[in-house]
Length: 216
Image (cartoon, rainbow, N blue to C red; front, top):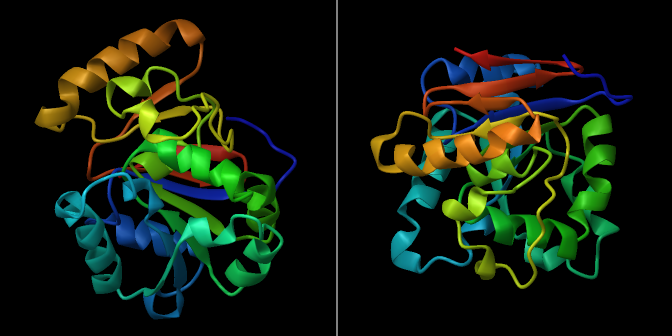
């Protein structure tokens, strides 16, 4: 249990909303799927060549197939216009950050000013949702995730997460192609004294106000 002086809801997964997670997500938002509007940011994949964007389209299609209304946004368009972020995102129930390079996404969240307004957005009862990189940046630190993502894809390297939660999400757990790297990240993070929370591609960390759990 952790406690913040802020009403906060987060949905942190490895991908989108597979299986039973759709119901969990809708419960967290408090609406039926066809009434849920999501602002989707796919910028974590910006450093990747287009041929590597298959997972981006897959995530988008899965969210659409779940019945949600999706609008795609580009965090780069808010650079120098931070004050417009809250206005632009106010109609949405959830703000979703997809997977890609964690360090690039974290840098862009600072460059655009998103990091300065995210708590105001969540204070208006919106859900912060993130898959993979989008989940990792919600935690307190990014140390040792350079074993998975190249930090040099970001113009400057930021080792602090957004700190929306004090636990460290470890997405894609038990996925064979990632497991060796994830084991190393976990082992290197143990001395930091933070709680590490592995989630498979079928699970999500659900944060509701001041409590978190892994579902299903």
